[in-house]
Image (cartoon, rainbow, N blue to C red):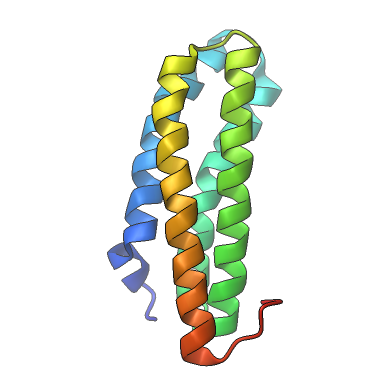
Length: 127
């Protein structure tokens, strides 16, 4: 996949939309003076789309698959961290729930893309 083709991937586009939605939830946390938590949320949020792009640009199906695994893990981590924003009282469950549903859809799409890569390129499950 050439260096700009990741922008055509639906999973990358969806991850960018999720990042934008998360940004609006995360920004007030900075104002709450929990800067470390805020920074970690930002890093996790950015990691999802960044891993998809990095893997797509790797030029290797196995490398792409590996980065899709990282993106999936980051998406699950982001969902967990959004739960914590509610538990810490930074935001409401209603604001987080819609984004968490989108993350679940993204994870399913990432898993389907990984399965397709495994089939098309005869990759082992460990990748």
